[in-house]
Length: 146
Picture 1 (cartoon, rainbow, N blue to C red):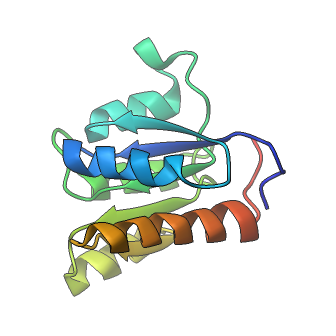
Picture 2 (picture 1 turned 135 degrees about the vertical axis):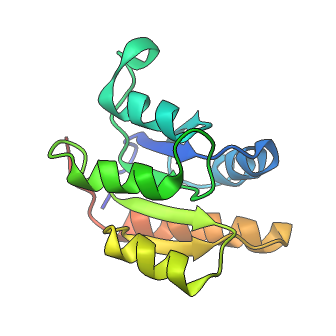
């Protein structure tokens, strides 16, 4: 469970500007204080997570929201690298993508995704999903520290 008042760091790995905006807006309405950072492709996401280059002082995320369809390095490759890395593998990864394909769902879980959520097309449903992520991952579930 998140500590009351503790700022939660979330890394959103998403290349669609509209989805980034929707996610920011939805999280701005949650009760939990959230620091939402964005990586717009897989290479940038891994640099952020490893504190490489411009991300040297980036906070370690408490939760990663990962799209599968990304430029430069796709979400499957990013997920595989996160879960093979001793220092990153404990960070929960929620796949948040448009794909409803069974092979994508199975593939994400085979790579040890912590959950798989299909993005809704309806704006109200999108807000509901973000609120559910906040309620479960930031209020009910215990996140690993450090």
